[in-house]
Length: 314
Image (cartoon, rainbow, N blue to C red; front, side, top):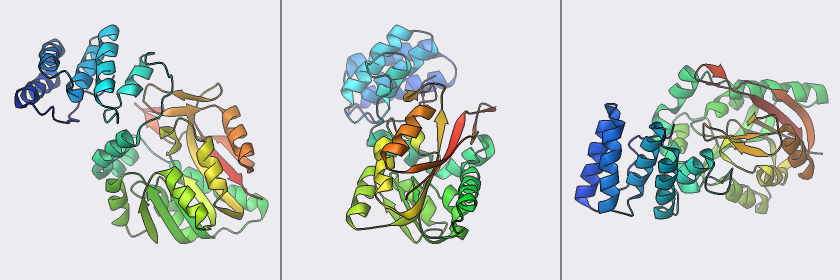
């Protein structure tokens, strides 16, 4: 279901804010009907209160009121152009809103990971059995061995580096390691580990464009569990190709589905079909070396269908 948690942007009305807080407290005790009633009153008082509209949508969704949830999420979307709460994603999940796989806004992604940064490592490794970096390292080493490439890399780039989980795995194989992430809080966590020679807080597309303009060349680019937050990774793969050194390696993980293109999963992550990935890699001028099934994490104890992908430049 949608999150009814404590993501909060004030309405500017103290009474409305207090009613929202009371509703969330009721929901935390399992009284979703009572919470929905209070939230309905709250948005009458403050009709542009995006946080309350979003919470109302989430609670109506929990109660099985699809139409009511869609109406509330649509109000949240309209009240919040930056989509801080992810209302557009919830509408897509419910089959409404027009675009079945809308892009996540930078504001939403930054907020999501800023609030998650402090507990990110424990959540992934202890609860979700996350193995993405280790799987990618094995894939890269296998491809390099088959091609007669060296095991170490002069310059490596960790796209969407997060707290440095991939950086810790690849650091022994990189003479110089650069990390970039959209979330300042995640970058701060990574900085504390002392893994990177350079860390940048930026969106991936903007960073890669700046690096290409500066003539940067990386022997290895990795993206572990990053592309699941992008609804179209072809432009990013093309941008990576422009900063890969000759015989450079791109390695990434994605979640996958049986069809083509990108789909938004109920978990609000994107999955990609194999035909799409093959086209995106070929269109970027890269050569596919590996496209292998890999369960990099679990969801509610069940392995998630994923792929480990390795491509190389000429």
